[in-house]
Image: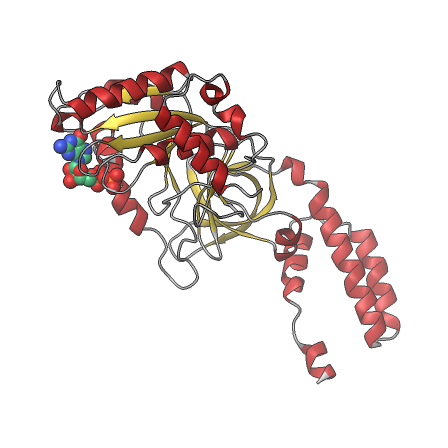
Length: 348
Ligand code: GDP
């Protein structure tokens, strides 16, 4: 049994070989290790030799990590991560040892990667992720309102465009307040967009109430927009908002997120994008978040499967700082109720 295990090729040997071939290893030190290993091949010595070799390989790899190119994660699969660097998509794996120390990469992460010189069956270059750079912002997904653990799904986005509608489907104001806190908690600027305004007459009572609510959000520093894909109202405003940074699209299914993007970029269909890509074994996506680059360079991240965002870094103690209107007692009753509902959902 023991012999069998010794004969088995160590999966790390491959890494070592490519390290050696790429010239990233100190050959003098390697020779010393080999001389030592030539004497007697006891199991103990083999183990020591392997440890020494591994250490050398890791040191060599660590030494030049800072010189590796930095790409950005487009999409995460169960075994691979798709990374963009200078307009080219790379298929990357991350080292097993790496995941023990760091969290696995997420969409939007900036990563340093090492070219393996190989290509996958579709001709995409393959690489190994060696480091994830510190995240500027983080958006998490929550499984329920009471969920304590949020799963990070998007890194380094600048803003969240929350798309909503009064009709088809009906707006849920409570969800909007929660999304605002989720965005701000993760460091993103929330923007509220009321879509499908073509379905409402100008004197519609609900539209007037919604406009009052939006005026309140504006006082709190949350930008608000109105739009219609059908009448093209507000599309230029959305376009200029998208230019201000990487934008996460949020909002329940059917509010018109993909229609809005298609109205701005006719060749881009988010729903098709979400189901294409790698479907082979081990390559299904782990979250549905995906980053898209529009033709003018604008970056948009869609989150089609995400129903609820987590409240990253938000606690009962600091929740009032996200509700300045509650703090200074200018909150209308619906905002006060939202505040209390969110407060109740946070762990005590
Ligand atoms: P998503 O799930 O948020 O991406 O929503 P979709 O973009 O798939 O849109 C859902 C439905 O709403 C589709 O039938 C669209 O044609 C329709 N829709 C999208 N925007 C508008 C709009 O501004 N006005 C009207 N009347 N319908 C819209």
